[in-house]
Length: 168
Image 1: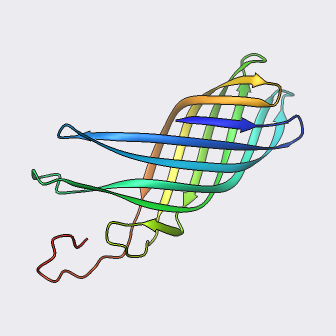
Image 2 (image 1 turned 90 degrees about the vertical axis):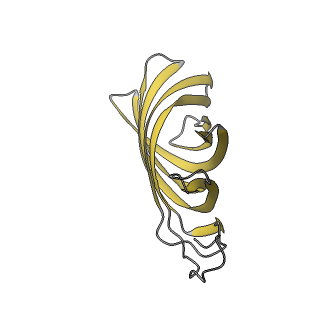
């Protein structure tokens, strides 16, 4: 996960994050990714600690596995996009380094891809994270750290006709 933030000295800015992840199943690597872009409004407490309010959009792939209890494993990515909202607490350790706690909620509203090409249903994403920040320039910062995510994606199934094993 890598991010880029543009936070000039006024109260508004932009943060973008790219995430590329994978999972290893039976010796094969399956990958998925996401991209987030948010507008930021920030306020200060104790003159240095920032509270940042985020609103923006995301595009995300979420893996779906089928047949984990057998040797015939199928992994497909469900891709969708929608709005995202969050809050961050950023505490400076020095002028250059800082630590940040964040929480984000994302709501998948627009289908980009499903394994059976059907529409998506209710899809929620929650994230809580701990990031370190590095101030590259007065108004440019880089982020790296850890995030715990929970994803819930649903989409409509094709009725099983007894012949096609690719019905989901």
